[in-house]
Amino acid sequence: MILHVDMDAFYASIEQRDHPELRGRPVVVGGGKSGRGVVSAASYEARRYGIHSAMPGRRAAELCPHAVFVRGRLQHYADVGRQVREIFARYTPIIQPLSLDEAFLDLAGTERLHGDAAKVGHEIKQAIKDELALTASVGIAPRKFVAKIASDLEKPNGFVVVQEHELNRFLDPLPVSRLWGVGQVGARRLARLGLRTIADIRRQDASKLQSHFGDWGQHLWKLANGIDPRGVVPDRVAKQISHERTFSNDQTEDELLHAVVCHLCEQTAMRLRRHGRKSSTVSLKYRREDFRTFTRSLTLESPTDSTQDILQAAVGLLQAMRESQPRPVRLIGVSLSSLVGADTPYQPSLFDDPDHRDAERRLDQVVDQLSEKLGDRSIYRAASHRWRRR
Ligand SMILES: [Mg+2]
Image (cartoon, rainbow, N blue to C red):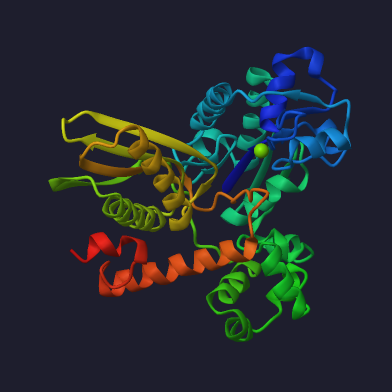
């Protein structure tokens, strides 16, 4: 059995725990009433007013004028996240964190030591409550994606177990948007064929879905039938993915440096996707001719595996670097860290265009496939051509 544990309103709950005067009140983390920032978390009291993460602070203040806005303390939340993970580690070494506050646990082989999955789930919830004064929701199922759906169903403080023989009964009535890989755009495409619930998909012909939607249709049909071969991938694989280039002659030309960075981003992003990871920290390493080395990093709003996102961040860092250090360059490197599993849901920012994001994702897939078959010189962005053709 697989457990999915998801902390309830994690950041906001930590603030309420640490500041008793905030308990029972609508608390908004991030955003600021001035309206420039976006909300990064909202307590359940604040959610009742329609406030949710990624909403502009100004909008949140309109919806609930007496909400308490607090500035986020990411480092502190990360420390608490580690304490949560220490509790998980008492029960199994196979832990796949999706973010600071949620993780999959594979309990295979632990039953004789700790009892069945439901018992472990209850104990973990209890330990989180007793030791950290926080609550978590737990989903338990024989499939990864079902465990994730289950943990969300009765939030907060939820506890849902789905046994093998209950899979269809559990999944059937749920809307298609509960499936991994179905966003708003996807749900609309399915609705055009009258497919609204998971049962609607399950009862379709797999070949019909394949012909309408390609591999995506095939993937959905499998999930709807409770088929999900993905296992829990523990997080100790790679901590960062990086590529760098040393020049035979020190370089000064901006266009060429830009092309190198583009090439490095294509390489690192592709490796990221191959490892089934997303990253939220992009770093640029920059060594001058006199061997002084600088590293600059950018933290993204949400983990990504999109070449375009990574490229945008790295090019911004390069431009800033060139302005402050215009001297000839000996080495440039790009590295991606703060890695999480690729199934970490993307949190769209306000200005995101879902169709555009979809197109970028498909482009990455095609490039990955062609590079796998024909080598990484077969297809690449025009922006890296200046470096690649040399
Ligand atoms: Mg959570």
